[in-house]
Image (cartoon, rainbow, N blue to C red; front, side, top):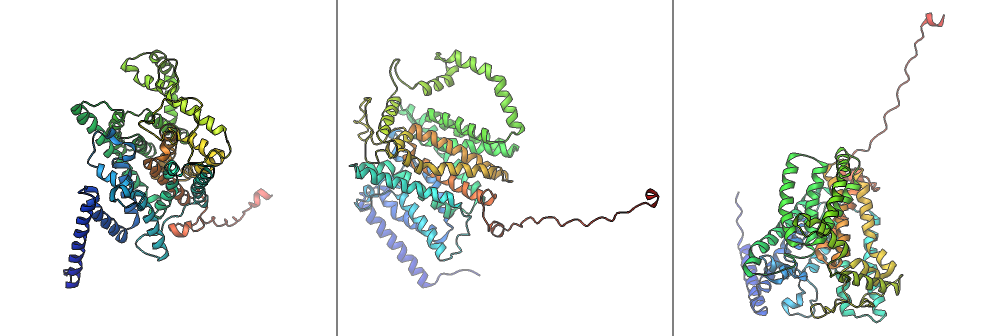
Length: 527
């Protein structure tokens, strides 16, 4: 039987196409031919149709890929020398809407609208008992509570700062992405069914890392030589987290299920992603990678492989010590890892001078000391008792946005704000740890190791590179937090009375009591 649309249906299609064409022409006129503004109505209708017809997880996974893969315009990708083919999507996602369409009230980026819209759709479908989305595994109440506390702690820091005379215009840029994180977690809570969605989440992150690596490699090998450029990085700072997460997934998957297929695919992905990470040239990326793998190492039980690695490191330790001692003052390429390690420890500065980051850290600590409990609140600059080089000509608001977001959070929020904002990280790692030791599936254990690695990487990124105000870092940590919560419910690491009923499991019944065996007595023995 063939489907033939009625006249009314055809009329609806014609009216819809004509209306879309008119809106597109109007958008082209308003945007002066800007392709981003021109395509916005078509993209908006496509997204609306996807949200209306398909399960929410498809939209959530698409958004995750786009956030991690497109040019992250707030961090000046490719040093703004070359827009990649994904630059228009990055501009559409992360630029304030009023700058694109000229409507002053739209002072938010499209990505915020997608987050809020996804949450609204999830709540509406639950209220209507829609069957488009299957039931989702809940997250533990403590995790939901600390995520809410994170949001309200940031709001309190904003109010506290404004009461104390803070600049509200600059304060909004200090906390925006950190406040969005609990909302992103809520979005993925409504979108992801449970741990069964972890493999597709992992593949999405790997695909995004490969995309960014391709952009980084092309820019480094083709664009830079052709234009004779000298650049500090090839994509952006926050991409380090995406690269590291993809590499950690490959390593953890092989560790938990050492098959040849996992090894071959993992090695290929690690090489391709590693090339992009090498060209991006962020020292913090290597620190975060080592930190994430070290966290997974200490997290793992004493398997034969862990014992082999431990014995190998102990056996090679004398050679490593000699290698570092010989290479500490050497400029040879053979000792480049030592030079990188030294630059991390000592900073990049002339002899006898303090590194810029060191001076900034001292200023942040001095600011925190003025009010250790509550901090200054948002809307205030950090103090500068130790004068910094003036970089206002390229970054006018640099004292509102310290590179060290961790010390910055202490300076602006004190112990109270710092604890409230980041308590969810402790709960996330705690749930991942309990789930790891109760999980039977290798993929579940892989997810637990990756979660711990991502949290370690995030803390490094926050400490060294303003990671707290990056959507790339925010999305990865939020997704991992949700997966940790759902894993803990499914594995039984956190109490869930309906677990057996929802998952179709059978509660283990105690074995029936054994029947007493008859005792036979030999008459001869009695005699």
